Image (cartoon, rainbow, N blue to C red; front, side, top):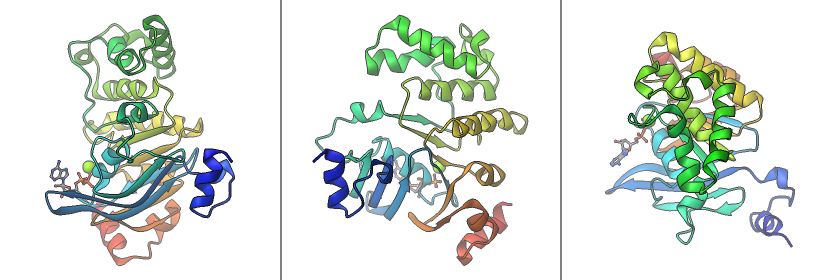
Length: 261
Ligand code: ADP
Ligand code: MG
């Protein structure tokens, strides 16, 4: 029996690889010094699926994304990536992070490095890949997002939207199984938001599996297969965007949407 089949049997699902989500979060609790931030959270991201997290500030969106990337240890529960129990303490976090790309609100580019060096830093350090091979893949991706001509520029010569697109390219350079995006347009001037959202939509159309947090409800509606409303560190309501955003069941979801739109 394969590892996949064994895992599938353990939790009672069919041994069909398509039924094993890329990311599976089960009953995850996260406490910061006694304060409960994630409170028994369950969530699946299926292959090629786009799951969008919405919810008030402090509801746990960023913490969930950071836990999924093993930047924060969880207090209880489990997270599986492609059927592998990645929150097992014996797991090497670097090996897991190679399979996950993450982009933050603030682009986090290194100011003293060129765009190309920013993008290839991850494959050079984590992947130990050949420098030339990394540069080739980086150039290919920069070209796809229309930024090849900026390869030798420093980040401060780029607009915020361009910097964020570079940060997304950096997250893609290892060909991750899963892309985590945390409010990637929140730090941008309004006129620069569109170019970043268009890039994310393009990735979705190519089948990239994504879990993202956003305050852009119009974007959530267009890009999401599933919208999850987080409240107090739990998924209070989830479903297709037209249902959760258009006709929410929970009064708290309704109140949140009335405030934000
Ligand atoms: P969101 O992204 O939905 O705004 P966060 O995940 O950032 O929510 O935060 C959820 C809660 O966890 C907040 O109350 C926040 O203050 C708390 N929190 C987040 N990170 C830390 C930390 N490193 N130490 C202590 N508390 C934290
Ligand atoms: Mg946040």
